[in-house]
Image 1 (cartoon, rainbow, N blue to C red):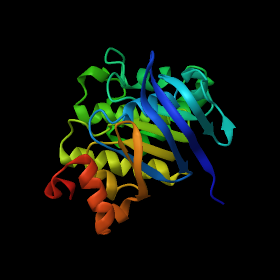
Image 2 (image 1 turned 90 degrees about the horizontal axis):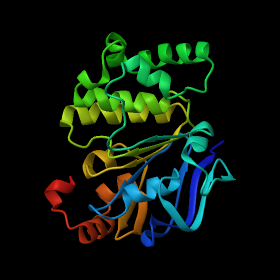
Image 3 (image 1 turned 180 degrees about the vertical axis):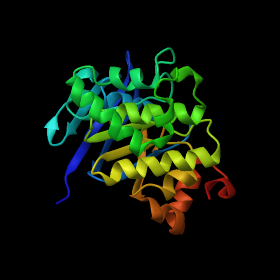
Length: 246
């Protein structure tokens, strides 16, 4: 049976008196990877922040596993099963890798936290030999893997990722998406805001396109690569060259 783990209804989000995202409705099912695409300034990050309680919700609703969680504080959402990885400041560089993992689930029983770390270093083997390293000494790719592991530490139902491959090499970006797929295969609903269009489309099930804070298109990710009409829609709104699209 498929469960709709994340749903927004006519969500308008912003900061102060400024509305950046307007009337966006979307959904993510368990085990599904959904891409959130659009040009810089389209509102992708703001939408995610609105969902996790870090931006102001003017109108609309957010539902997690069928429950209305609109406006609930971020720390409560995390304990309810919502994982969030911001683009920046997503690890503590002065703490060790192990400490980064531990502090992300400070409310868990210590024995369960230790078990969870053992599980995660099997899933993310790059972290296993570096548990006692300061996180600030890790490479950019390793930091992103640690950030993903930190969010997955609490066994979330939903994982929201903001530009997880930004500034990473193509090879490392592929590895990040591989891990994202593995996380989703465990039944987690994953939404990824991403600038790397080709990789996002090839590694997600469905995609939403935001332009100027509004959703202008939604379809299966594969169709954006194969359906000429949808391809034209995307190219028209985002103004990217066909070469960079593929």
